[in-house]
Length: 216
Ligand code: DX5
Image 1 (cartoon, rainbow, N blue to C red):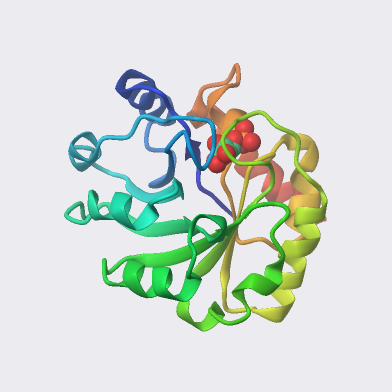
Image 2 (image 1 turned 135 degrees about the vertical axis):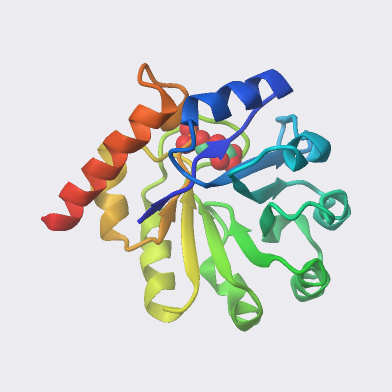
């Protein structure tokens, strides 16, 4: 199971300090882009700064009412490798996917906790993966909604080729159930960046915990 740390930051300083704490322990990160409308949170993100960062690739988690317009601001940045669009933020999902594909990156769909898996029925062959929100999007430190794990297990059975990520509510006490769901990746935010250990130390610790759980 991959660990894709989720950066939900309000300033360049916070972004750079979280990168520093990671110390290249992973190479792929999730950058939360929240517009203050789709979710109440307004995050910091600056394509020029991201373009200057070496040694990381990024997936953009668009919590944004105008995801395609926002994606266009990032089109010339090679380290952006994955675009994640919320199904709840677009009116025509297949048109949005088709448009997102023109940017030449992987295209994932994000589902809020209450959104049914059925919404990807007609588009699953046109996407590269699904991001399952384990919490109401926009904030860190919330408790995982357990029904989301059932939705992930359902997706792994029905669409075995689709890559799956869980974002939101990843904590040590939920890791066993998360591993059980067979999700491909977790996107921890507070567990990695709002902990007494450095992000680097926390990721080493989490990798060990996950290996122990997988060995059970
Ligand atoms: C929530 C964000 C998540 C968040 C996860 O809206 O999309 O990526 O950073 O934070 P935790 O892991 O603390 O729930």
